[in-house]
Length: 84
Image 1 (cartoon, helix red, strand yellow):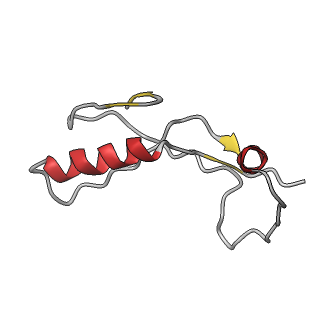
Image 2 (tube, helix red, strand yellow):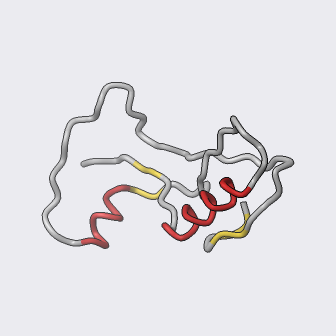
């Protein structure tokens, strides 16, 4: 049974983060968006329905992507899942 997990974000949160990053005067910054609550990939497949096709794990692919995020001096913005 497949046991991979990943962070899933609302597309509107991603769009708002891109927009906020575009408005800043800072350049050369790296932003890593994440909700901090990994969910099983199979759960997403259940929600979407249909046939599941399992593919081999790619070289270097982690079993769980935590999508870590860190607070910094760039300010905060509130997404649908909470403030980042």
